[in-house]
Amino acid sequence: DVDGDHLQISVSTGDLIESTKISGLTVTALNDQSYSVILTDTSVSLNISITPSENAWGETAITLTVYDGQVDTQTKFALSIESINDPPGMSQINDISIDEDTSGSISISLTDVDANSLTVTVDIQTVDWLTNENIRISGAQQCSDNYCVNLADQSASIILNMQPQPDQSGSVSLTMTVS
Image (cartoon, rainbow, N blue to C red; front, side):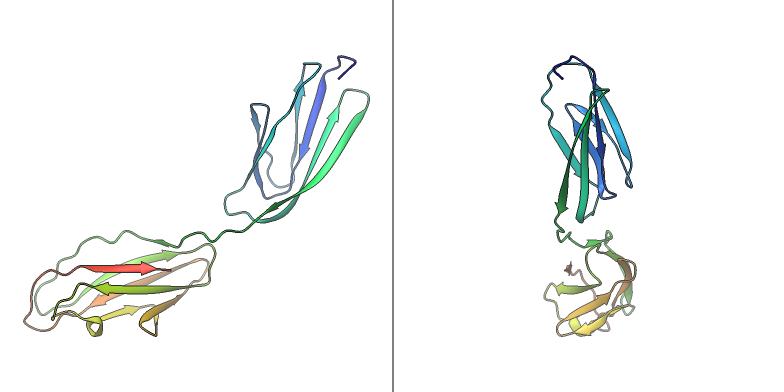
């Protein structure tokens, strides 16, 4: 400010913004809140860094106001946050061991903030005693060579059921892919 007055800078954001950083200060405004920073130098260059809330996307309005105690100047701009496709999540699957002539099952949690359905693929190391015909997934529908899972509130639980051939034993490696 040429008069040497303290400058008050106000920032108003929409509800998509987690935090805004002004010249090394981090201030937080959530859900259409406003906040102010008072600067005491007569000339200051400001860099404003805006951090969207996690998984936020869309458009929000940002209003910047500079006030010297007598007169204010205001600028407004729209900030567009592009949606990205976050990868789906899957719970940790631990190794299991089952007795001969019995079946085994593993409960698995799936999540995806971007999708209503997921495709689950199970790849089996080649062995004679456990094939795709011996594997079923409860909570999913067969779709082509894969399984399709519908998500409710961005999550689902499935159960991987394995029934090896009778009188067989050994180790096998399964790879589950979710997309």
